[in-house]
Image (cartoon, rainbow, N blue to C red):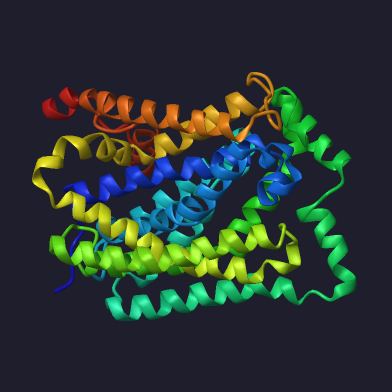
Length: 403
């Protein structure tokens, strides 16, 4: 029987979304605090060679990078089924496209004004395509989703076919630019907001195009797998505790093996760009079972009744995922970019970044439940919902009850 749209919330989805949005900041902060080349190639950063730098980079590479954004993408796919349902015809398809339109605009504003590394724009495009598969059977969704993920890998791996004579230019542009180019980027992002926008806009445009086109097949494929997992009861905590535990442990072991190999391979090759294909392949493919393993273990925790209070802050953070994602970017820009920010881009150590991540996590886990005790939505969720429905939505809980 096909599922209709659901109006109630699933705690398990909110908890997992909250965990994901927190973990994503541990990766994103490096892209905010460092010039783009140093983020991609940490060997350019003298801070990396400190013990704290290597430990933090290795931890993020092995346990976080590419994993929680994968979970976030899968949850986005599950959210499409929740929002639109599987019925045909569905009047909520038009509503979905309105949501994607406004998400696209949020993403464009985010990328150009706050931080170029936005994921909302590519998610809006991918979500507009993935919704067409909402009625497919889980097996079909998984097969097509994995095929798209594989195609995306081949697309990325094609770079390694670049002839020898053309590699030096690519390395100089993308991987190891001269010091004066890095210094110029630091100067651009350290300038006051309205002075830097003309200089940083091309970087935002390039990144959005790469994210939307170059990673688009993977985003759509993971969203389709998320749809399938939702239909199979995975995201709604519909499996047994032991099934989650066993599936999670096995998947996590496989994924961690791939990610650990990837980190070791990057170090062994001294981050030489055209020697990293084995490590990139292990990171890319290892992220899939590792993400599934993390998600399964979170679902297992959601099956334990006496952990309700422990889960509550994460569920609140997940209910406000858009607000918290944007808040992390605003905090990062306030620290690392120029006025009105502190302009510390290129000056922060990995230890500083780790401390900032911990403090932001703590703040989100405290403020999200407090906000939702008073309001029905996070501030950006309220704006998104109001724009989608073309009318202001009740924000205060007492207003919703009176209405």
